[in-house]
Length: 151
Image (tube, rainbow, N blue to C red; front, side, top):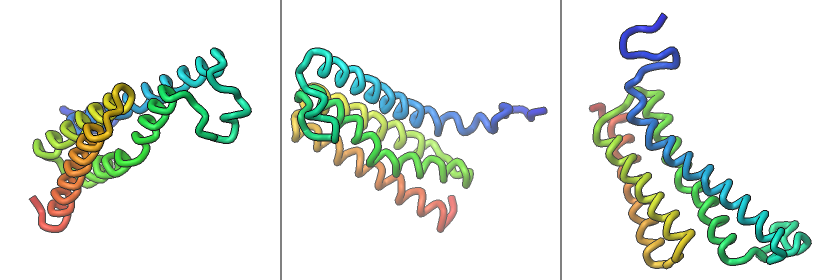
């Protein structure tokens, strides 16, 4: 039996912290499936030969490479985001500021991915990356302060 405000899987209070996580995970899976489809089409259309990419060589057409790199970027910096959210939930550290920063980080990751798979304008993509990294750094500093010094 669950208490008021709880689901069979825990507190509803975690939903605001988890929603941005689910959005970022959805982006990652969307890029994964898009990359798979683009690779399949590149091989089917003979834009690349299997023997030229079988060992991870850089022979993919530029469009496929953009999607590939954007997907792999989602497995880099966001790991620190996922770790922070998991720790915050585990330690029951939550705030409106943290959720706001989460959404800002996710929005910047969406912008970064969007630039990456379209124009790939390096300065714009870099600006989105740096902004996201700074938001994540602020999140970690805030979190560490809460852990060591309390609310």
